[in-house]
Every structure is written in structure tokens, then in C-alpha cells.
Length: 262
Length: 66
Image (cartoon, rainbow over all chains, first blue to last red; front, side):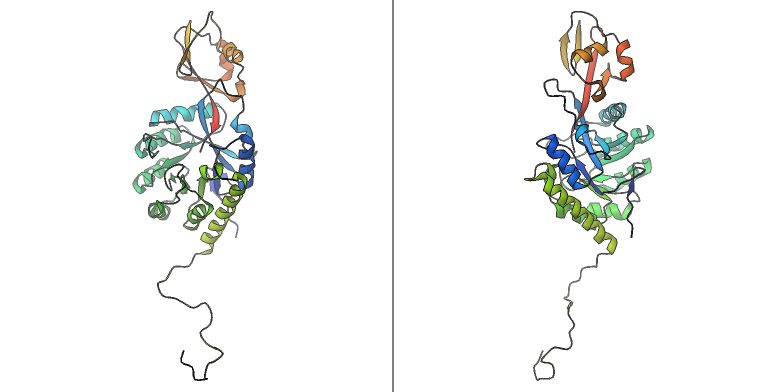
């Protein structure tokens, strides 16, 4: 069965999106992105650092990758909209991950400001991916306003703690018509695999790849885990049961009829 | 003449265009986006903008991010 993944009006060949932050260098980042097989990569927008070199992150993103610009640094909807407009003016395309964070300790998103930004940016023609706390009511409003997907967090950004929000993410998957992409907190390939098994459309991973001992190796592992999880989901994962159920036949034992009491 | 560039006040001895400011800084135009007094200005307008006292210029570009 062919599994075509269409999101934001584009056909995307991999359900693993990868972030470009925190890598030790552009070369290892480029190799990791290539090894992951990702076709969507996120970047951020910042004031030019006049003391740094002129290296540009976009040069290290593999050809054919769709760039998704995040609005990190925004503390409210207006700032997110401002960043999105700058990103568009740069010619980097119009895929925007809205990230509005007003809490510097836990880095949790402000869902209301995110929704406000989403409404404006959808109206302006952006393809919008809101990063959000997994709240069904807000997600429904996001869907109504026309976002391409919702991106609930698995656990706080950069914590590598996995899908702590699983119950809420599962509810979103079952209730929403739009794709659910888990973003943030996925620490190991099995976390990404789990997301795909429960029916996420895709996952976004950054820290777990960027700071691993071998970013290229783990990027490949994440790619494989996402494919495995997706395949399992499509194959119909059997329900769990309380009682045991033998996998081998319970007849034809060697000593049957020889007086043993089984 | 003082101009605020990326939040920092810079002094200039004579009037100049935004285009010359960018070139003088050695920045590659294709790699940056500029907000001039809170308004995004595309590259083709840079030569026409003459900087004046109190202007605010934000110069941004892409960096790694998740």
C-alpha cells in the first residue's frame, strides 16, 4: 500500500521533520539531515551577529528540503506575525511554525497568542504549523481557522523526556481532521516510533539528534523508527489483553495420552 | 547622526543609503532581511533609502532552530 503524505499542500516523502538548532557545526548538521531522510527542516530568524562569520544555515539544508521557519523568540502574537513576515520577505517560503513562548523556565507555548497569530497568518496566506500545548478545544479552533497541522509538544523543549502528553495527543488524533505532528521533547527513536504508532502524521525532532554522540547515526535511527511506527500504524496494531494467549498450538504435545496431567 | 542598528546605537559622520550601509558592513544582501523603522524593505528599495537621525534598522538572517 502506498502511503502518500500530503501536508501544507505538498507531498512530503518523510514523516520525520528535523530542526537545525544546537548542532556542533553546519557540516555535521548537513550530514545528519541527509541521514535522517527528512524533507522538512526548521530554521529560526535572528538579528545578524556582526561578529560571527557569514555562514548561512540555509546553505546546509539539503536540496529538496522544505524550509519551515519558526517564530522562536516571539512572546506574543504580534511578534510572531512580525517574524513570519520577515521570513516571507527573505524568500524562504511561507511555511511557518508558530512558536509563542512567554514562559522562560518551561518554554511552554502560549496557546491563546498562538491561535491569534495563526488566524492572522492563515489570512495572509502562510502555511501555518502552530506549536502548542495539547489542548483539544484550542486545536479545534486552529483547525477551523485553516492551519496545515497542529504540533502539540511531547514534553518540554529539549528535555528528551518523550511523549509525556500521550493521552492528550491521542485524543487530538482521534478528534481532529487535520494532521497532528508531535514536536518537542522526543528523546530517542522509540519515542518517535510511538508517536507514529498512535497515529501522528509526523514528528519533529531537533535536540535529540543534534546533541547525540553521533548525530548522523541517530538521525538515521530516527528515520527508521518513524518509518517503522508508521508501517505498524497502517498495519493495524492488535489490542492488548489481560489474559495470556498462547502463540503455539495447545494440542499435540509429545507426552499426550501417556498419563501426564497437564 | 545616530542610527539604531539591531538595538545598538551607531554614529555616522555623513548621510548615506541603506544599500551602502549594508555593503559597508560586508553583508551578503541575499542572506538578510531588513526592517527599516519597523517596516520590511525589500532589496530593490535599499539604494533609495537615505538614512537619517533616529532611524531604526533591524537586520536579520536565518540561524539553526527547532
